Length: 201
Image (tube, rainbow, N blue to C red; front, side, top):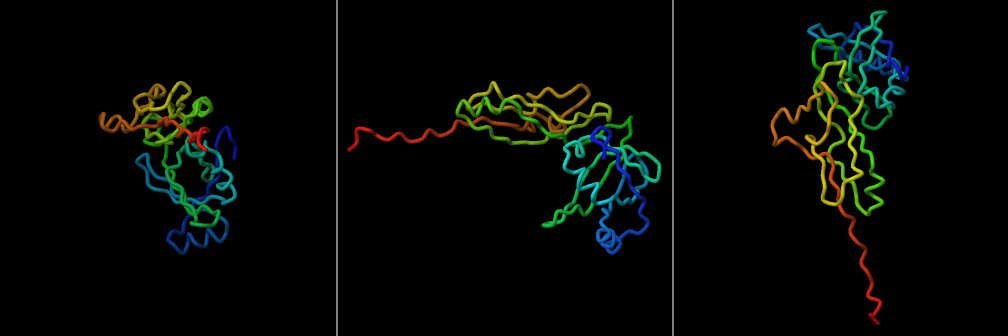
């Protein structure tokens, strides 16, 4: 995997079903499906070691990925990742094809900056959301959204409507109406430690 291009080799999968998927996992492969762009769904397999390494990078979840399927390069985004309940294994992946002319509906992570300023002032930063649901054309897809909390004091909060999204990017929640303008982060004052009464005997 390249951190710059996010290109992954995939094989076409001919056998489907629970039994076939179980055999693939025993062979250290990950079954996957690719759908969207008004095309038939395609079943794929990936090397498990490649996917384990890929999922450690935030960009794997937010970038437009390139899937090399038997020499054909297809652009897609990761829509779902299923993991084993207690083993460090990926059990299935869902990818959606990217069409340059059609908007994506996905989530991007929120990066909070300035938290050290808030905590030094004796306050606590409470995250209500760590992702924002957005729609945009593929070329406008941001890797993340930044929220600066440095100037906030106890009692302050930032809502989705307060965030300046990149050009061409819209909030799914705000499109539903003002009552969906969720709080992203709130600042709370730390409780003061009780002061002992030095005059008490």
